[in-house]
Amino acid sequence: MKSSNLVWFLFSLLAGFLLAGILLLLNNRDTGTSVKIIPAPTAMPIKVFLSGDIEKPGVYELPPSSRVEDLFVMAEIDTQINHQYNLASKLYDGQHIIIYSNNSKLNEISIGNYTQININEADINELVELPGIGETRARDIILYRESNGFFDKIEDILNVPGIGQSTFNLIKDKIVTNSIRQ
Image 1 (tube, rainbow, N blue to C red):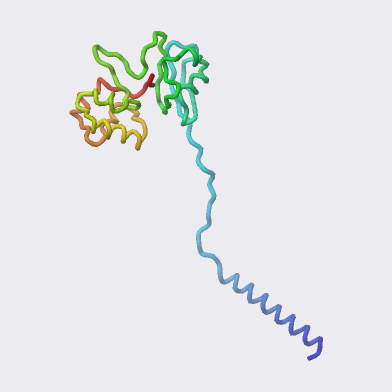
Image 2 (cartoon, rainbow, N blue to C red):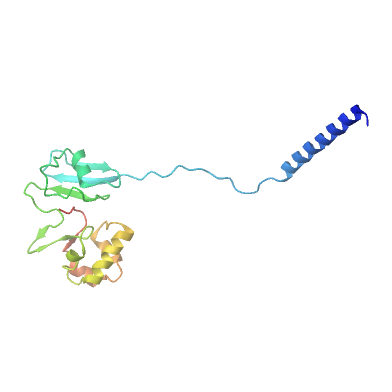
């Protein structure tokens, strides 16, 4: 074989491979769906209403994992003199915190001769003090709260399995949802 024929042979062979590769790519298109990259969602801030014996009452916007201490710092409330408040207590959206100057408890509001209990913060011992709520139902309330988040209003306790309208009627004047534990 002459060298010019060899060059043409190699050129033809290379052109054939190139043409075959192009045809293969054109006929072998991926039929899958395209992937759309979306940035991770940013957690929405919570809003807490702060009122009472303070200089700057109002609605404060905080990150979702905020604590009472964070709110006090934002509202410029001296955390060193306010030891009657649990600064580590978690805040939740829509919460109303009232600052009392007379060292009143915030999660228990006296009404008549009984105390209201915050169902968003109460432990088993506090919940069993409610009429019609035994240890099992108190555990159910805490489990529901941990699984579904805080109760927005006292009527939301009706979503806890085993708590019906008759039990709710017994406890509705004895429970609250919008205060912090001391």
